[in-house]
Image (cartoon, rainbow, N blue to C red; front, side, top):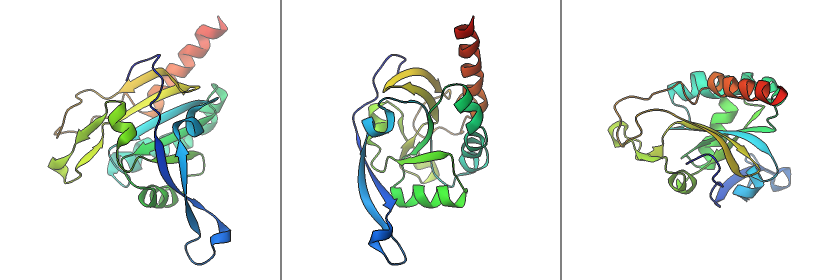
Length: 182
């Protein structure tokens, strides 16, 4: 993916809470499009290899969650976490992490991830196809900034983390804010 490119048009299969459904599991299917998530907003999207995995659960998701107010102050309307996991897994992970500020996007089939060039094999870990770790600032559906971890390849022996960290994305936004103010 490159700066200036429009995000791909994809339909995401999500599960949303709906009390009208009743019962112990009051959720229904709801299709969400790329436009639903990205049109008319300036957002941070970050993607990671899998829900419930160590780096994702210990550093990346909590870091974006805890810094939400700082991102808002710097002109970000929302923060999205995407993974090649289904909606059931993403919703349970968000619940287990007590996420209130970051919205999760399930890319269950990996279609969005494939279209942005970040789908990699993680067979060496028993994962199959997953996302390479990255973050982006997306402004009205157009990539404004791109933060990709080094070493993009199938079955990479490590899980690099730093470029897509909330701290690094904040550093970019703070510098861009200073330039705009000058």
